[in-house]
Image (cartoon, rainbow, N blue to C red; front, top):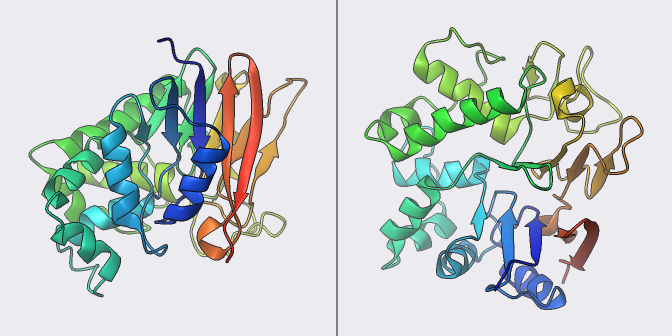
Length: 282
């Protein structure tokens, strides 16, 4: 059976019931459709284990790019010293019979996914303004290799930190891996030369001085692409358009489900694009 739809879904953060309702509303067919999750599958919503097991049971071609909360789960399992507070939701994942399998599945997920056919780039947080598609893919692949390789522990040990505030090709390997991870899983505001800012509230209308939302600074080589992302719940479902292109240059799918907002999907069916949502409040 040929695939008929790609379904991009925003941050779940362990919110199982809205996820199930959204799939029902979409009349999701796992044999024909492809789920493309924008990351942050876990944490806060109470049902992270159920969400992860569902994704694993679905198998390929369904996948998620990794978000900062997903990486936080991996760091928690690694007993990183920065992750000291007991997280009952994470403990349920680790204590489950499939815990090791779940962690391995997370380590095998991408940080950036490029759909060449539809010209869609899926990332959890953002893309460095200096990166063209080839550079972005190369940088993401370096982190993916670290997650899957023998030096996974060293990568996790060096993952946390806001400094340096920018990516540079000449940085030492594990510094560069950290700055790449910050770009792909944490960024909101940036400068044209790729400097990141992590202290602001995330109000797009009140950017830190000298900074702009990263999607306003995308490298010109992305001009016929749409960057689909999550992470920025203050934006909600948001579409950024630039130039005379019919499709949005960037689409945010994080509509704050875990905070009682909505769960948002971008459905790509051939040349047609549509937004489908379910409410997440009680």
